[in-house]
Length: 400
Image 1 (cartoon, helix red, strand yellow):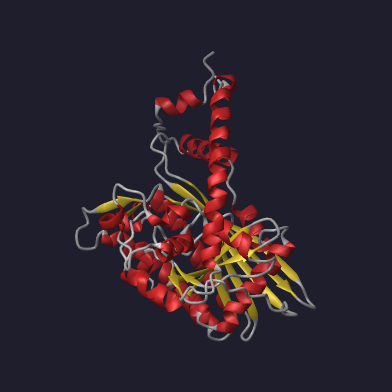
Image 2: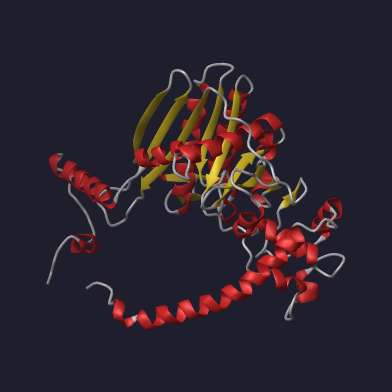
């Protein structure tokens, strides 16, 4: 039976009325935040010191600051020749209701060469993982300690594989060439802090970060900028820095001063960074650089600590992340800004290389059904008993 929309239409109306009321407050909060961001009397060094000394709640992490908050940077001219590399991935998770314990990762890759001799290389690389060592991450100190690679850990595994493929592609670029390497989403493997240390050692230290090392090594003999692109970001890291700025106390301490009562920063509540910079920036401009405040970045990333800036496009604000070694080189930071914008112009508001990589990587619902059917058929062909759950069989059967 399908969803009966008539039963929730009144609830939708109530939701819309509530959001309309909230929008009025949000507009004033956004104005307050913008006024503080553009305040010529805002002292950057004092604010950085206050942020370092403050204790904010875990619910609103605060961006690290480098540049004047009211920074506007225009893009440079697009190079006559450059290469755009991109990877993206999809997967089929393991399913305990199916005949075999396995998962599949499908990587999409794109190389676009611009200049007098332009070319395009698009490919996909599906890989099935079924060996025991591919299905779990085990502690080297205690083999009985193990985590199954599924759900969040499979997401992280896929990110590692995407980064590995991007590192491989970067190594084949001609020496001295100009290029950008783009990943979708964040450069941060979120959520690993909730797992035992041997998991982060495997996926982050010996996986993702080692691949970032290889890309950095490729950049030593090429003008290569590494970046990740986040469309329609929902972060509030910069807005939270402004909350610290308006806090009436010398050091912001949420639990000590504001627990159970109205805080001075309520005048900025609900403001997202994208709304702030959509008002501040003009088309093509980037914001100041900021440091991602993630604990996992501070603990593990080293030279790959994640910096970010916001980029104004025609219809939205994008969040562009770069490792620290890119951020601290003005030529590479400028290159990332210029080439991400150029890719968005060519891709109707979204980087065309990433869009094409996604098309190569996508796994549809029909693909998943056909994959599991093929697995079952292979079992039958080899005369291996097929054990699936009654739940799985019932989903493929029409009873009424």
